[in-house]
Figure 1: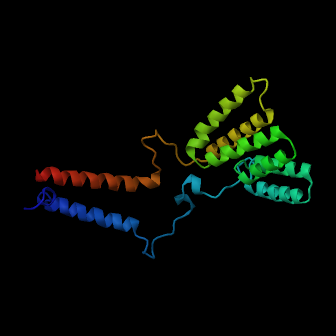
Figure 2: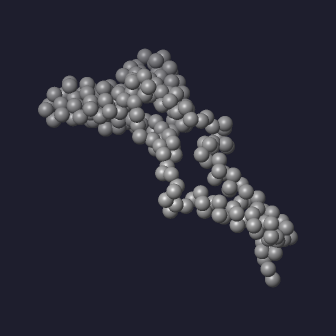
Figure 3: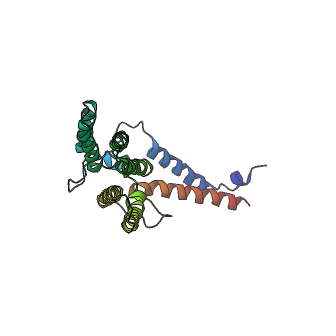
Length: 217
């Protein structure tokens, strides 16, 4: 006895299914030499190579150069210079994890506990919250603002840590301001224009499947 699905698969529905499969195969295939290569716009925000912000305040290349100078100064036992370069590298591009880790370790050895705690705070945050994520750019930045505001009311707060946290919030907000591609309507509908065809095909496939099952009952 034919199944409910096969019994209900009328010719129009069968043709629709075949067209759907062909269209999906054409979209997913990577062997067509005429198909254009995916450009930078095909990558997600988090996957894009880091670039300096428009105002020049945050620059990964500058951070990398400062980090190299910090390591050189540390090798030469120029502790104050090394601390300064590590700090500046982290502030130039706050996601420079090696800068914060280097600063924390060196500050610990130099018996500067406040600096070491502040650097560890930053290292932990940038490990957890990548700057390319939309959630981080919006919500974590706001949380950091609230953290700084609350900390400023505490007499024994780590002032350096609060300053670093404020810079991290500035960084996330700068990344958010430069997205410029789309804003999600809500968490239930978070699609970019390039994702519309896939969503539509998925919806059509589901509708055809349900239709065949219902027609066979």
